[in-house]
Length: 331
Image 1 (cartoon, one colour):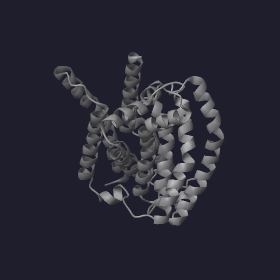
Image 2 (tube, rainbow, N blue to C red):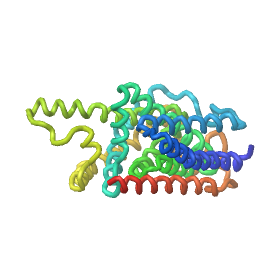
Image 3 (tube, helix red, strand yellow):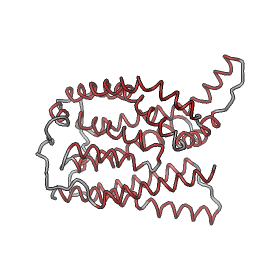
Image 4 (spheres, helix red, strand yellow):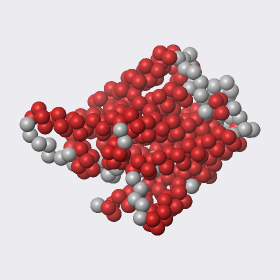
């Protein structure tokens, strides 16, 4: 299969995957209206992740190449796994800054969704359903399929395109800014280690931290009340639903800015150390110098973008717009 065909197939897979989310939602809406069944947040996550798993499975079965090589399922230096976790720590202030900034314009619905799920299932099940499962599926789609394919044309372009796809795949304007940053970070981790397993680890841990906070919030509020002897102004559900005010968000942005700046510098150094441990510093540093592709030169005959990729982005943005309008209608 030619490199051009590989990229085309990857983008077609992405387009069809996001496109068929629309009829899936229509079917769910029809069932709920005809039966009176109200889908819970847990059911919504399980259905959506199950759908993505089916799509990924079909792609892997249909791909006329070795799946482990296509998705870059390889061993990586065990010591760099620790550095990947430290990297998450240094990069998190940037993600939190972008998340806070986006809340000046759009509502954060993710925390509310996680809270609704936390009421239904225990903590470890929540980590699996909201943390590990989405990380596995999203990494295969964005870093396994799209990054691997588009890197055939340009490593830099592959990283950016996979990050945009990752942001769009969330179909939520609040998440898109920090998801784009995380998409860049995860793609760089893959290039630094040569393995998608490293970024699956990073993604799952990042999700797990967010999930853990929501599960711990009621206990934090209870501890605060016991220490101060005063009742909290809001419970966990109200706090997550109402979110922070504009002045509080601006203060958070101000406080996070120096940590985000320092975090970017430290993250760059850690990425280089991870690449060096995995003997991939030449590939990693090529991002700042000449183009270089693992095992083969880049193929300039492959177009940077094609209609399937653009159409996939458009579908995601339209779905995000409908979601935002639905949220506004509720308020």
